[in-house]
Length: 443
Ligand SMILES: Cc1cc2nc3c(=O)[nH]c(=O)nc-3n(C[C@H](O)[C@H](O)[C@H](O)COP(=O)(O)OP(=O)(O)OC[C@H]3O[C@@H](n4cnc5c(N)ncnc54)[C@H](O)[C@@H]3O)c2cc1C
Image (cartoon, rainbow, N blue to C red; front, side, top):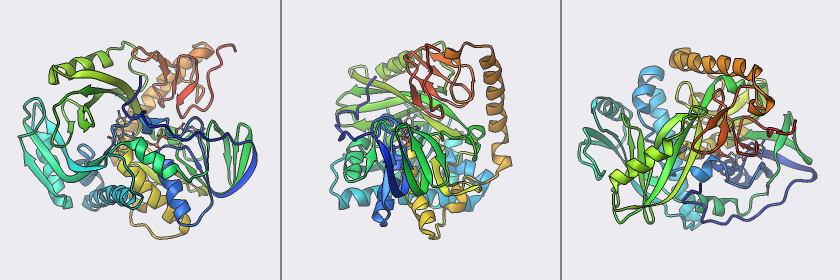
């Protein structure tokens, strides 16, 4: 399955052989890693980026690339569970994140279809949650409008429009910002310790380490595997003359819409990674797209996944109190574009010893029991079941991360871990972390 973004050829990079040195080592060349590496270089550090596969071949290649501070029903949730000031900080940081993209694109003259446009959330069957989110939007000072008129191909009960959000072509942007970065491709990191990162055939002596592998590949310290799971969704590109007046996200019927050069991208059919053994997600999405745009032509389809935190806020900052020179950006809850931009400034500020007003909101070392207990309990249930089933499974059905039993994703022919979301292709190669080792079918 190919995405609409893979028309861009990125420069091939060498593998790391032997030893090298850098002030900062960034692990993972997705949007979070690349933007952070770019920012660190700008601030005068020497930076090495280590990438297991090709640059931007992970979640970043398969995003729908809306750059927005409107992240579903986030502001009502944040206001009630974390307080109004946290909701305001979340909004401000993501708004600044969008502005940073615009600034870079202007300064570097990057041709990546960046367009300012409104972002909507809509309720197809009920306007209740949309109205509540509108009240939260009011409190945080967002520029918003409540409406029931949209350019969607169906009626909605209510929609909330945030002004001045954006969309772009993510890989054209990546191509420009990674041009002068020192990236090693096909260089999976296999071990991380204070001051040293070890790869298959080399190592980097380094002062600071930034983990941007999408889902952290090490379990200790940090225990990230207890604090997030992964969710998968599907996308189709429909070639059509129709266009929308903004980007859309459905709340009661979770579907995503945005324009691209030749038509409209539709996303949906989300499930916890590892929970699609029956298949049918892509088929249902194609049917939905057909009903929306009967004269359209399906030209592309793909899927993607992201790490979901229990309290709905990503982990950006110091990896652990036990590893002060190690940093992380993960748990983007499917909003990693604006949040990669937030992460790049926040992590660079921490490394420079500069105060950042968003540090406390995003710190991975927060404890918010009230906001996260029910999701924690669900995830713990999956882990106990997955580990128990793993004990009774053959090696080729066991995840190389912690040993949970893998489940087939019928739509893709892949194997997925329902506990922490690792994904393996048909040949047993890791596609998505936290697994960091292929399944050896001959063992
Ligand atoms: C269907 C879908 C649609 C989405 N649409 C949007 C959207 O419209 N707007 C938005 O803001 N967000 C969106 N997202 C989320 C967004 O795509 C992600 O949050 C973002 O791309 C994550 O970027 P990343 O850099 O963290 O991860 P990645 O892009 O996955 O980068 C991580 C990199 O680390 C590498 N890596 C892994 N292990 C190792 C190792 N051991 N050694 C070295 N390298 C390693 C991987 O190969 C990979 O290249 C969407 C997500 C989904 C699922």
